[in-house]
Length: 288
Image (tube, rainbow, N blue to C red; front, side):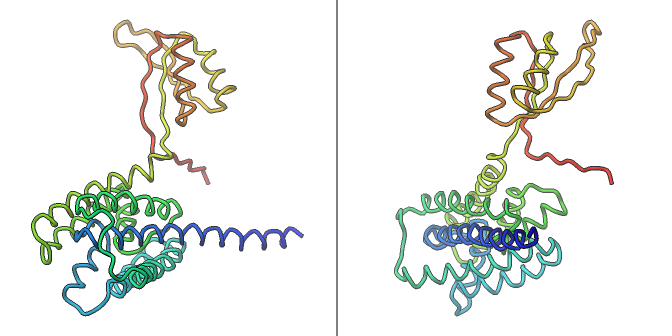
């Protein structure tokens, strides 16, 4: 009976994953066709490289994107694992498919904003949102995303920065087909695209590491464990001025818990010494 239940759960999970990936890639494709192409810039994407190549070969952007994605997909499959590769196979195929759909549905489309600068801004916001969905599902849209994922895995560079580095190469290459203004916008847009992407990926899951030295240690411990239902660690700290030993309480909380914790500290011990750090990643590696 349990096996039957599990067999039903797996297709549902796969269907849900497929829907999420499809929605994300539809968003990214829309950003490319409706904002990147009209802006005549090459902001941090394989589609931007495709736009450059399109000026030299008699192929549609969707076809060029497909060819570039296949090459990089093979590299990603080898370097980033089967799960990443399998999902990216699907998204890499769907990206040019959606672009092709938009090309046929809106063959004479020019621009929503009639402004190059606004098109670049809209592209950065929309594409970063779509990419963050994929990266959080251990997937990518192919192309430069694969390059960024490889850099993240082997060089431990944040995804946004990795996207900026790889995208800068494409942005600089746009000098072959665009004027100086477009090239500058491509470079600036690529830089900010990395920042916005990191915000979408890490900003929503941002936690805070709060370090507190207080006279009311037991009360604070009780509040963290029983009210916030979080964990805490005690470290012995020695003051440099009078060499007095005190305990430093360290806990990691989310945004809502952080606000409750700070309200409690201000109310119970306004003289407490508090330092706060942003935390992007937490990993527990059990001993084997």
